[in-house]
Length: 314
Image (cartoon, rainbow, N blue to C red; front, side, top):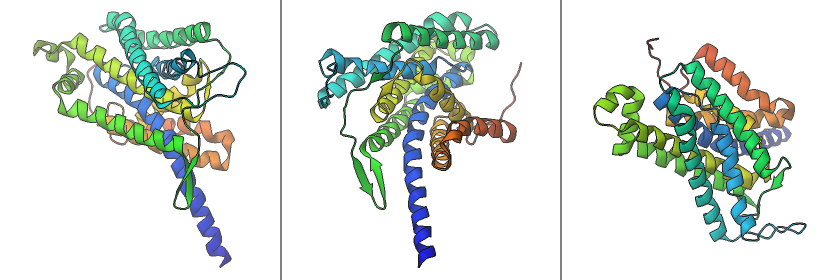
């Protein structure tokens, strides 16, 4: 019976790591969707997107602080549900406005410039946001409000934190809603038209500037939700917290097929599970998984799992 027990033990540990990886991958999926929508419309990798994720975590921190639920030098009280709702609305609205402002000031003037110019601008905006974050929020780490009790929920042989369940459910709902919005609404059709051919879409009556601006707003809102969810699970905020997470989300978008919302979601989940599995074996190599995956995907299938290969005129 001993080998059977050992096999059962191993299966339970694998299931546990899969559950942890799905929760982590759900956050990657939320951020990756923002990358993939902007790339789908503008053919631009918006590297500042990772810092909007960071802003989402901070914007959801301050409503609790302003309402007195973050006393200095005292144990953090549990924050009421209505404050969580206010924090959610404030973070999503502020990040959506930030995304639109970035598009209007940094990217729109370069819409007809070379891709290299736009790429350098994206990196510059990312560095700017990190430094502004350090000036405004301070370089010292901040502790996130206690919105949940951090209890475990038994799901068969494994235990999953309640925050992980919230992350999975909210991320699935947000990604699913965005996919339906893009596929089933007139505005979504305008986004798809701009993605196919922006100039022709404009000639057919699509307001290109408004459509691109809305694309940035939606992507930034998704990043804000991701930042808030990860801060609830790992309550330590720093102005550079989006750097590594943003790179991993970009890898997730490439893995799933950049330009595809289902692809970004699938890539995020696969990357999260792979990272969790490797981290259970050796935490030293957990962060390297994303970059190994990126190299393999670019060598084997550059279009990603759900991406479509196609010729491009240059």
